[in-house]
Length: 232
Image (cartoon, rainbow, N blue to C red; front, side, top):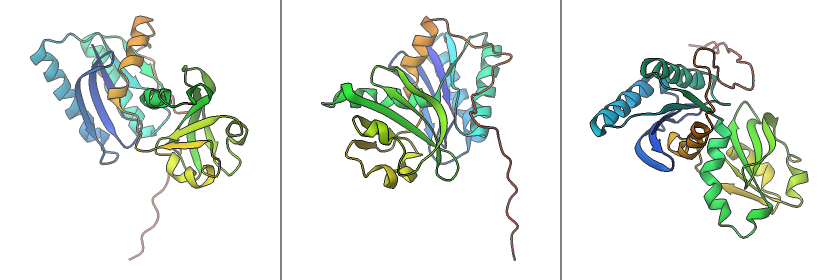
């Protein structure tokens, strides 16, 4: 039994998973309200554990990339739970969570063996956080920040189907849809309920983080912005 926390995007979610079985799940899709929502979701999850007499084995958290503030809130909460409950910490890459959520759908397609998965998280302007993963979960291109133009992924799209998904896909779709090998999966977000199988694999392999020193994988340095001056 693993409590999973996902706060890397505009969605805040908490679940309790037993491998692929979801025992508890809470989500909020209303924007970056993680500081308000996450403590409430965690409190409800722990209350559910007490009521159902569930003994948690670990805390899993989305490690990034993604929203700087969201990741810090999620990781800080996860570390606090690990200290308080004396549980190990598991970190799972955000893009892997997204890819795992579409694996079953892609596996049912006729050309699945010649297919790549491309999760995309919105960054700034025409930039996304992305990776390329095959249908056997092998990393073809690791997580990186990429500026999308009309030539992006042209080499891979010349002889392979690529499924694009995530909130970064929408702004890139007009540039990528010219290829017949580009496919798009709508409404895919990194969610806690999709972390179960990856969290179990990490737990079985004892892939735990150092709770005291662990930091999220931001991928890029945080850049503070100054609010625009308002005119009255």
